[in-house]
Image (cartoon, rainbow, N blue to C red; front, side):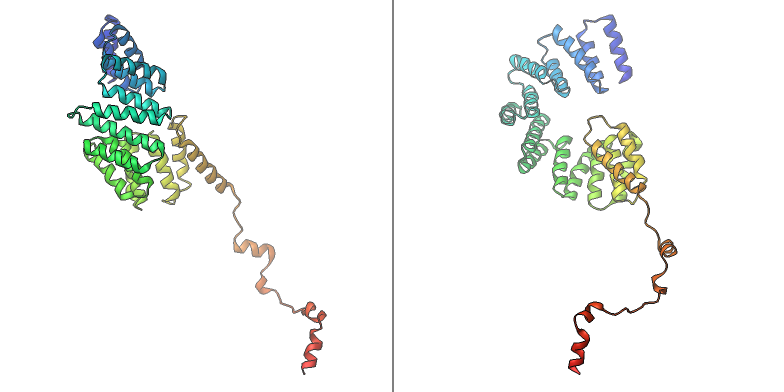
Amino acid sequence: VEDALASFEAALAIQPASDDALRAAAEAHWALGDERGASDRLERLVRRAPDDVGARVSLAVILRAQERWDDALEQAREVLVRAPESATALLVVARIYRARDAYDVAKLVLQKALALVPEDEAMLRAEVYDEQGLLELARGDTQAAFEAFGQAITADASFAPAHMNMGSVLLNAGDFSGARAQYEAVLDADAGNLEAKVALAIARRGEGDHRVARRLYREVLQEDPAHPDALLDYAILRADFLDEREASVETFEAFLAAAPRRHPGRAVAERYLAEIRAFADAPEPPDDESWVEENGDPAEEEWVDEGDESWDDAGGDEEWEDLE
């Protein structure tokens, strides 16, 4: 991809107004995770070709990923002005409203999008159902989310995000075998899906198969040594399930070095490290021999009965004499 991007940028240097080169360069930047580079090329493209609906949809998707909500909405609306039947543009709009917690509006937009999806667009239909599931999760309705993810899988069994989201719902419900089936379905279609491998490892850990979980984490980290989720979950496995609490420190530290600043797992890793280090720094309790050397052996001391003064004070002796 990097070589292709270099070629596209070289073409743009020669022909800055080339729509095809702008589009290809934007796709290459996106594939490399360079959202800013992709949005810059697409913005240049839509200024040159304002009726290019595909470019506007792609730009709206990238702007939403950058959390530039207003700019993304503007591009999606420009698409709908030119192509009112675009379910893809409506899907972008719904995702923006979900991100803004405008759930009722998002739900109405998704219903309209679903009505506009052509019958032969199985993946797009699955994508709309999947977004409905995410919306229901955000609203707190797990059952409705479960049903929506199921509808997405029915629409297109190869749509991996729906399997992943369904697996997440089952995992949180404690149905580890059900979650495992969803992640295995993803891996059956794409054995190199690292996110599915990490999720499968969590499910196998839940089933008590810690060795398989460790193998899966190691496979992911062999492919991507800085994979944040694999590092965090593997560290937790080592600390809590494999009796490798001290050794897990290096894995937690590797996670903190690799994870983005806003990764939600950072607080978890820092808490584990603080607990492990506090335990390591705590003074060890004295063993039996050192305690005896310091305090003496109570078993060897002569026991002396000094009597029960409280009983004597209460007149105990007199009472026994009366009984005689």
